[in-house]
Each structure stands twice: as C-alpha cells, then as structure tokens.
Length: 267
Image (cartoon, rainbow, N blue to C red; front, side):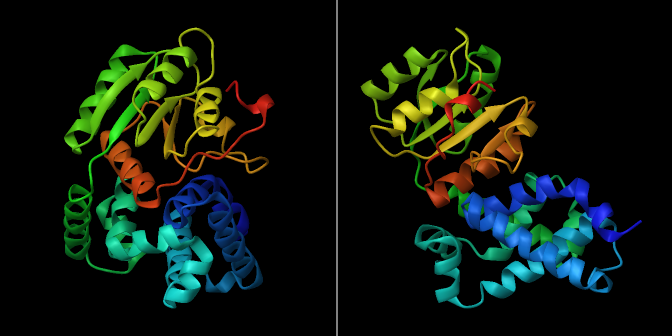
C-alpha cells in the first residue's frame, strides 16, 4: 500500500496536534501540508515504523528544525506562541501532548521523540510542573449536562483555576460573562434550550477577547479542513489528562476562538 494511503487516516489527528503546537489552524495546517509534500516527493525517507508513529516522528523532526531560529519561530507561530515555547521546553510540551492528547503509549512517544522511555517520563514530570506554575484564571463553563459540568469544574479546580459560573443556555452564558468577565471559556456546542455554544462564544468575542475551548461529541463535523475551525477542541467523552493538556495549551497561547459561518454554528 502506498505510504500516502497508510498515513491518510491519521492526518486529522496530526492536524489537531499541529494546531496545539503552533497555536493556530493556519500555521498548523501549513506545517502538515509541507510535511506531506516532502513525504510524497521522497517516500523512501519515511521511517520504518508503524504509519502513525512514523508520521508524528517525521512531523516533529521537520517542525523542531524550523523552530531552531527564534526569529523564524516568532514569524511562523506568532509572538504569543513563541513566548509560550520559551515558558516550557519544547520537547517537554511535545511529550505531554503526545501522551495526554494523542494517547500514545509512553514507549510510542519515546519512538516519536527518538529518546528513551525514562527520558519521556522525565519530560512529562517537567511539563506537569510547568503547567502547575501557570497563573490561575476565572473560568466560565457553558455546558448543559450537570454531571459533565461538575466533572469539568473539578478538573479545572485541580489545575488551580476558579470556576465563576456554569451556564446551560446562550442567555445564561451571556449574563454570566456580563456579570464576571472570564479569563477562559469552556463551551459545549449544543445547549439545553437548543441554542448554540458557538453563537454564545462569538457574541462574547464581539465585546471582549477571551481564550476558548470548545466541547463536542462530534469533532469530525468541525475538523473537516473545509472551513475555519476552533483551534482548541475537546471531544466527548473526554479524558481528564486531555482536558488538562488542552486547557494549559490555550492559556499558553491565550488565543480566542475562530469565528465560524452562521451555517456551521449548529453542530
């Protein structure tokens, strides 16, 4: 089977990983596109590894090479993201995302990073320590399922954040944001009264800038590559480690949600 067909099923997740590393959809997709061009031009350069592991290894090899020049780094991913990389060693962040978000085993992450498993363990400890030193913020949760909202609240509080309000509808979300401006928003897509969390977020962003993480049971409907997408996305059912990793990333990059066309806001 051609290598292009072998890696095709893994590209949506690689795009997610690339967005988390770069802090933007466009920069992440550009990096993935350049990698694919290189693989197609020279298939023999692809490592003799399982396709998913080899794909991530190739991506990180190309990505980190470009980041060696700090000026190129800032130009490629933005000043805010460049400062974030300075706050946490790049390899520690990569290891954390590979294990927590991409759900690689530690042995697989070691292959991708081309280090020992003990080194991966050290990197994960380093990443967790750095995340724990982040400045806490006030969080607005927009979620209509009480058990999920309570679980998210617990996870956020474990990270040192303060949940100031839990909103179940578009109206409740806007009222909560007006009463106490949040430093972070976690927003479900479909809300209790049939309204849209995407609409609520975009209405908030019309008045102030705030980093946003979207929550959905149908991420494949948003991550199509055919239209603007939320940069930070949590799929239901979510893993606690994944929530912690993504929340930490969005606060590193401090990036607002991307606006979406009205026709795409009812997912």
